[in-house]
Image 1 (cartoon, helix red, strand yellow):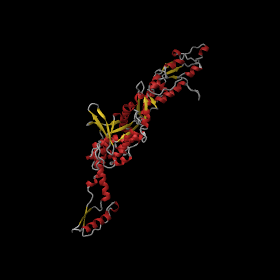
Image 2: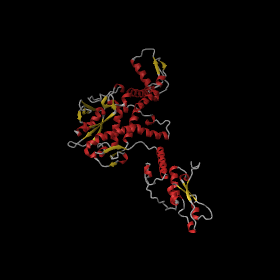
Image 3: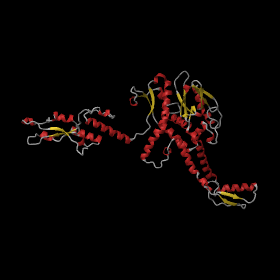
Image 4: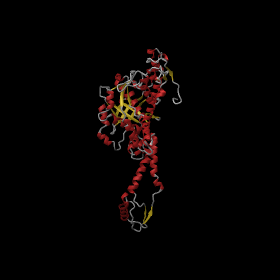
Length: 498
């Protein structure tokens, strides 16, 4: 069944035959080269992409952006947090997703699927299985106009029917088709396409372009009418028409001097204001097409009034509003329909895409500053430095309590003050909350005099040098019978500190 289906889907001869009208009983009717507005079939919606430039640009950008995003297979964590998941690098489902079939890598598969989705509101993946092996071996994106759902009054959906270009009908089971669709309020089995809401605009855009082309190729300038006072014989009329066309038809012959014979008069015909409005009309229809897809001008290459800042914001907007919703539909199909086909081997596994939204450097810098300030406040309040960073959501740094003096000796208090200043922007002096005060006179020992004015970041550090708040541990006055008169006091905030 799988090989028969694939042969019908991708037979080269049938692909050629599909370019000419072939009636079949699928969703699409026989293709008409008339107006889009009179042909609402899925086939007409697919063909619209190559007929209107604005629509092509929109679908091309959305499908490319969606296809470029990378995917990973994860094992869920008991905590339920995404950051605690473990990546799975080897699984049959992952191999299939990376190479859906022998002729398409994942990027092309996703791009084709997204084109179908954006043009018709739905896309169908046909799952190929080998007889006797109930595992997915290949996946193929199939044109939605050739897929017909088979409703069931009890189970809602019995299966699907694929109609090949030569009219062959191939039944498919529910386990052979995965459908992604934008819900249609009028049809629970089919998707809803933005193209249907702009069919008249697509007609207008296409015919405005054809009118402009015909004007330059066929208008015999100088524009006007030849008035002949007498009836011309057929050969005279043909001769006059051919000579006029030879001399004036086409862009290369525009504005040549006209020489008329047969007593004819020239009646000038200038370009009317109505004719000139075709340019504005094409711009209006392009706006209507963009509005249907909810996409701004910059997303289709119109970069008027765009600077570096707005360009960065535009990238983030496009990823959030246009790419992620399409990725979420694919993610739902992979996790809810494809993975269960592999049975118990996929229990606890899930596919997830890599975030396409570019990082906001300004926000990241603000968050880093806020977290650094929080860490400094906690440490200044007496909390152990070890573990403080992880508590405020920053990567933990091993804390040994030993200052690295490999380069040169350093004062631990100065090192800490400098770190606080770098992280928080706080003045070094303002970060020190305690100060050593020595009683200076002729009996003051040198160590106490040297330590006078030394500042400490907190009470614990100050009391380490002055147990109980008084008496410097390095004082040598006791050797001469003098008790240490030094102490540490809590510094008062000055106006500068505040």
